[in-house]
Amino acid sequence: MWTRKSLQELMTEKLANHLFMVVSNREPYIHTFVGEEIKCVVPASGLTVALDPVMRACGGTWIAHGAGDADRDVVDSASRVKVPPEDPSYYLKRVWLSKEEENGYYYGFANQALWPLCHVSYTRPEFQESQWNTYKRVNALFAKSVLEEVGDRNAFVFVQDYHLALLPRILREANPNIITAQFWHIPWPNPEAFRISPWQEEILDGLLGNDLLGFHIRYHCNNFLDTVDRAIEARIDRDRYEVTRKGVTTRVHPFPISVDFEAISGETDSKEVLVEIDRLKHQWRLEDCLLGLGLDRIDYTKGIPERLKALDRFLEKNPEYRERLVFVQAGVPSRVHIDSYKILNEEINNLVEEINWKYESDHWKPIIYAREHLAPETLAALRRMTNFCIVSSLHDGMNLVAKEFVAGRNDEDGVLILSPFTGAARELTDALLVNPYAIDHFAEAIKTALEMPKEERQRRMRRMRTVVQENNIYKWAADIITELAKFEFGQ
Ligand code: F6P
Image (cartoon, rainbow, N blue to C red):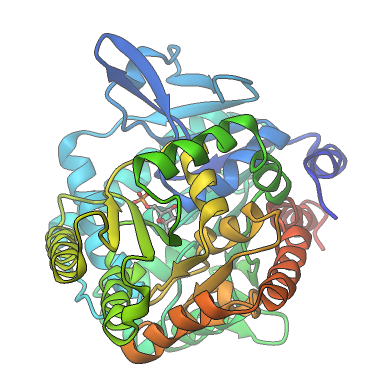
């Protein structure tokens, strides 16, 4: 079983002479003004949740966009601050972007072109040349920050996600001694879907500047190899899962990401969480209710309208559950300047309003929509209290909410209703798998979850907990570092 300690030992053994760096768009800690005071906030991001424990264990530097309004007030002259605030163990180095750069690169090319391009959820990607140009410029800015930090040291640079597809090639050309890996946190679509990108060659070439390229599942690795095969000049070795282009060989491997199982499981019994459970029961009048839960970033890939429609259908078909079941949908607003997100927000608000209006009584309404950033103890309390949790993504690379739910149930109870279109469904086969587009089946699954005998719930939850415990975030990091270290020794 991989732990924080064994990962630290592996780092000392394999990477002792190297600077270890993570590079991502999203920063793990955001400093923000609350009145006169500066508060440090943890963003709602699977990527940062997964990588923060790894950085705590490994030390090194994490480079990311400084997006908080107080971010500049806490850094040193090299734009660095030590984090986490309560136990400083690594450097966060911030890259500063202008509003125009953030618009073209993050809200623009990354999230209006690449995000819908890679997720099969029927939102049309938009390709604008000016956004593409800004994306290129911002990737070069990140590269500059990495190269400054590396200097003439040996370094392993671990790049995250679709915001930085061009970075590895820039690093490779500037400093061929840097060993680079990239993890693509979202799905990779098939070549027919990807080829509509007017800049598919440049994107693939950028990614093939990496020594190692990781996806959550083998299916996405295969899609990537197929895309390379159709789009550009490169030699592909399908047995070894390697691509060679411009003299560089890139290994393409699956690494299913995970969570810090022990930490999440342990915090569930903390005094703060138990107090929070009592507070929520009282505040939301949940004392004698059955509870369902959805916890998401508000994104059109998460299937939130589909789950609300399934709840509606469930209450329609099963009136005996009216006044008994409460569904808490907690959601953090996300990418709110993009039209497709504005439309989604409105759709969700309307659905919540309509469904509540249709069924509510004097002292009960079926849906509580908490559209806000909830504290970690509130999230832990909700996970622990609920009878079932719904993860209904239309398409998702992995989905860590599902794994967090399982890790948080150290009482070995609770049912996970999970979309088969998530990476997590490959591992969590004891969840109730249901197609979120099939509203009637979905409504049936809610009934099955509520009526599942305790023994079966426990049997399923125990098995899922074993899977998440064994394949935890430290194993994910250790597998990648072991693979990366091979490049050092030319294996
Ligand atoms: O799921 C893909 C992803 O980019 C994650 O890697 C990240 O945690 C999440 O989306 C959050 O997105 P954003 O950084 O845009 O808030």
